[in-house]
Image 1 (cartoon, rainbow, N blue to C red):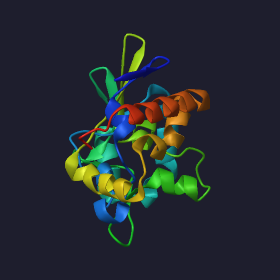
Image 2: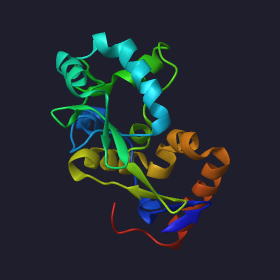
Image 3: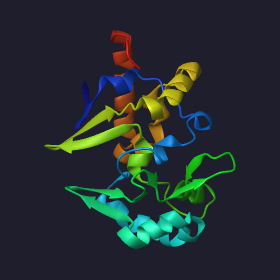
Length: 196
């Protein structure tokens, strides 16, 4: 583990190779799991706005789920996006190849919405837990979700730390990211990880 400002970071994040490979995984991170994507309190209003814009473009099952249970679910001290059947995000839309994609992100790319997607989705497979004034960043490696991205990252010689530069800058800013990246590069010179 290493530290950058008020963040503690798993060494796996420095060593892991990773680059999403949607044609292989079919967007599994949006449809597989035991809970919805974690949501920050300041994201609730923008997610409600996204729902109003996009709900008519989404699957009937998603609209029925939100009508019955709401868009955001409170769970102990956290909040998460609603899921159809406790797995598929309500904002999922499938393309012609059967790949699950985020309707919010698609609307953002099309210039119809001014926000890309929840930060937890943007950062995946990095997960953040805040304890005692520190953020703990961990690589949440789920083999059935992440294996294609790890293989693709190895083939492309792409590290997770660099692959997620945009969401990491979104969360912590450019100065933090430059310090983080320098720390990752230094850690890579010290040892090689036998893992991912």
